[in-house]
Length: 285
Image 1 (cartoon, rainbow, N blue to C red):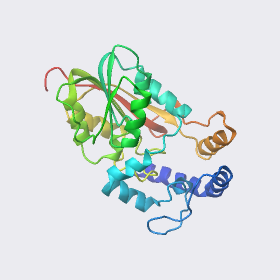
Image 2: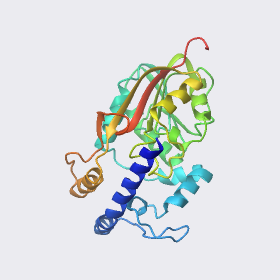
Image 3: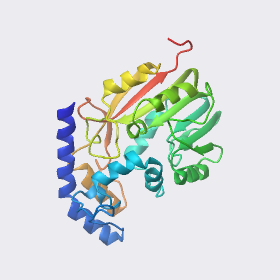
């Protein structure tokens, strides 16, 4: 796993350096604020992914580790439009959600919950108040609160379905998984997604505190009592193509071929994401 992590990390860093100047020109033309020096430590930013935040890789990771509440609140204040890749990602999850009481951990601005229709009680929780405020507007019949996934503010055996997408990689340890298990009813279903820690979205993003392989995610879930129902490895990132086309797509205001991450099933070494459907047994093991 380590060799794959380093391979993708070096490739993405090289890509980020090559695209630094094009992104600076793009942001300047559109009047988007950016910085070429870290606002915290003053170091030069040689990777396009840090231009808009103005925070270098080292400082970003330190903030994510030591100031998670403040960091994610700032990150979620700007609600970005849903990309085609996110659309496919959400559809994979929504089609697996049945009826009853549903909780979305790390609900963001309510994008997934807004796709769920009648005969469901919708609940959402996020660490960022800005996201929660937007989710309340988007999903008028839902119930939302701010909170930490390691301390979910709901009673044991409460929900029929639990959604937890792109959350666990931001949290050390298994407390969040344990809490997800606790609030599910017996026979309740959890739908979990994380980025592939040894793939293109693993180490490259410094706010990913925990890097999962498919097997380590399964082990963590089973270790807290979950029974695995099914799993998928999906999402293909094309180096030097995907990111450039995303930028061109934004500049032209229309979707281009291959501009999103391709949401097709692929081998683990190429996968961007893992999706696990798991169940809380009716009787403890």
